[in-house]
Image 1 (cartoon, rainbow, N blue to C red):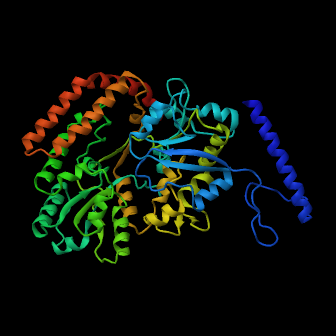
Image 2: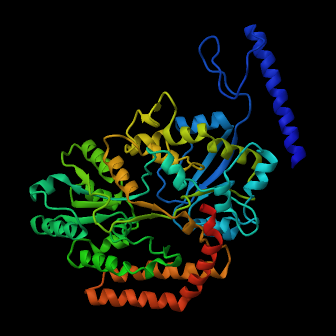
Length: 524
């Protein structure tokens, strides 16, 4: 493979030299430099690139993904810079990729969040470290990210996007986070009609929902995106993880469903349902547009989604010709509100063993990982979509909450390699509700990325136990939410804990503590 790489490098050099000579003859400028960008000819048209573009297949393991075609100015610019274009397939559901892995029918590249452990396997994917050594020796990844992603075999097969260390986030004060954070928006006109009641606690919020139900009986008090049921409320009760995560107290790790504050959260969610503030069917939605339709169509008072939900809803409402608007609930609605960041990033890109051109693939990722590539992906084309503010953030020439514009131009969503700083900077748009919500969140965020290092390995006993527990929680939690009484909700919660113990939760917790003690010093 090394010999092949040297031959290709030699041929590339020959091509550049020939182009340079031709250019020199045409312009009488022997010192003219030829690069991989298109050059304008004397009549103002662009010269086409001589090198053949390599098409690679990409599977995006996210059925909700808003872009499914390699087109638009960002994609075109990336192809211009890398010589790679992508043939994109977006997952139909969360079962498609596991079936593809089982059958061995894999594309060139896979972008996934849920199957990172499974694809980090030399039988399925090329180790990045080997490809970098062979084809991209100048591709430098920091030690922290390498350590996070290195598997038991000593290789790392991807690097997740959206990750930043505590120090990186502190260094960039305008890096405030991304849209992947929970938020709730309320109808501002209805709040005014209700006399702007107090909203300083979760109980206040529940009281307002009650007022809405009484005065507007045909309106849904709270509608929730199918993927954003719990996150906002968990944080208001001070729960330090999602239901399938880990939390730490006094140096000891335990499973999130055992956290003392968890029962209060469940009781609150059950109370919202029993009082008629949430539709039972909301927990069965398979379409992530139903909640949007209720909110934008004037049929819901509160809309639970992400921190951009108010800005996004308001734009769609205006486009529909309606005049009402939403405003965000405070990110810290409770004195107990706490956000613990344990994340190691969102999704990662894998170069599969079926890949037809591993060299082009790792060089493609190398470009996306460069400062130029990260800015292009996340902000757009400099000078056209954004300019740099000397204070340290991009002045965007568009509204990042305008999904139609962002998606049609291919901004952000080709972040097959990026980081939390760049995403956080894109989130900073002075004057928007999203920015205010993210600033509020940053104030109450505690960073514990060492907890994120507790990762089960593919085909391990711990992986099997955790998968069974998480699947059980996914099914049983709805019984708590929809219990007919508080007593039944408590009983269902206790039953869920008992079932988790029977599956092997204590064994899993013991392993997690051992792993945590061995790896936590990475972030010191």
